[in-house]
Amino acid sequence: MDRASECERLSRPRFQIASTTMVVGLSIPSLLALLSLAPAIPVWAATYGCSDSIVGHQFLEKFTVQAIDDLTRGRVKYVDATTAARLNLTYASDDHFIARADYTTVLDPKGPGRNSVRLHSNKQYGKGVMVYNINHLPEGCGTWPAVWSYAEIWPTKGEIDVVEGVNNQAYSQANLHTLPGCNMSEYRLMKGSTVATTCDYTVNYNAGCGVAYSNQHSFGPGFNDLGGGWFAVERTDKFIKTWFWSRDDPTVPWDVKTGADQVFTDTWGIPEANFPDDMCDIRRLFGDHNIIINLTFCKNEVEHVLTHTYLSLLHFSSLPGGEWAGNAYTQSACPANPKYTNSTLACEDYVNNNPEAFENAYFDFSWIKIYAPSSALDLDVNILQAYAT
Image 1 (cartoon, helix red, strand yellow):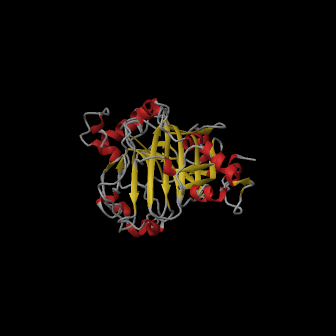
Image 2 (cartoon, rainbow, N blue to C red; image 1 turned 135 degrees about the horizontal axis):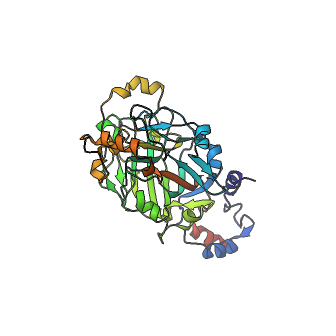
Image 3 (cartoon, helix red, strand yellow; image 1 turned 60 degrees about the vertical axis):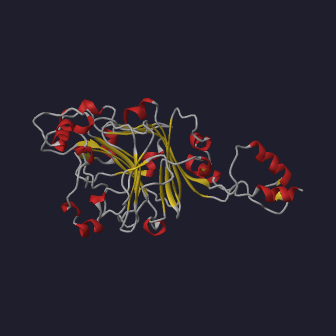
């Protein structure tokens, strides 16, 4: 049995009331005794069962390596699966998956960008939880890695950015991009800091309603020096939340750390980013998503526009827009040729001429676990005690 089918098997609820006196073969007193030995779980806790698991070689089976143009105009060339394997840009073991950019080639400034990869999950996922166990994120001046999700006809069913940053910044950023009609309050219950409050892609050149993570080891060299960590996102009709725990964080929940077959998000504490439905119809604006993992360079802030029909309707390539990695390049203490006063041109020149700078521009995933809503352990202890007496 492979890991995915095992995950699906384990996701079936194991604690459901089968009668007024028995729970999966256990008497109520026996179940209460069993529960007393388990970690504290809130009554009616938000509970999710594992529905898919992506580990090691399965990344190459459950994702497509896409050789497409980078419509954000990054200094990148996305290669296909065969080329990626031949150039050693993707490779896997039983419990690791690596995806990286080329770090040996000096580029012709008039030619294509640096070889890199863009991974697109073959399956779509909706409401539930995703946990990403990541050991290493791409780092280096000019890099712009991201882990995110979207629906094929962007932005009709929204976009969720879970991991994103540029250059060697210390913190990651979560973000939403939607059709008009989605806004966030500046002040919400979360650890992160509000960057913007309008998720509408037509406002501010599709900057989105970003939240900067509070953890200064959630991106870049700091993240990698600690051996990475865990990112998680929870989606319901009422909210979208993201969390992050560094590898050395003593508070990382047990179910997150172990990739358990069930997770209980109510025990995870305050999220880094919280996007409630107070001023955003999440049910209407978000649908089933594909997971995207990509690494580009010096790309345009008007990001992730990956539509076909919708893109032509928007005439998106003619829209003005800032460039995050490019504009932030010289502000990030990154080396720049003095002949370039434009930050983006300086970024592209660096990417062209310094391949060795991208030796650490790679993703290293241990696994991704996907969880679907479950009724497991949605038990009122007071009712159980009443049955036991």
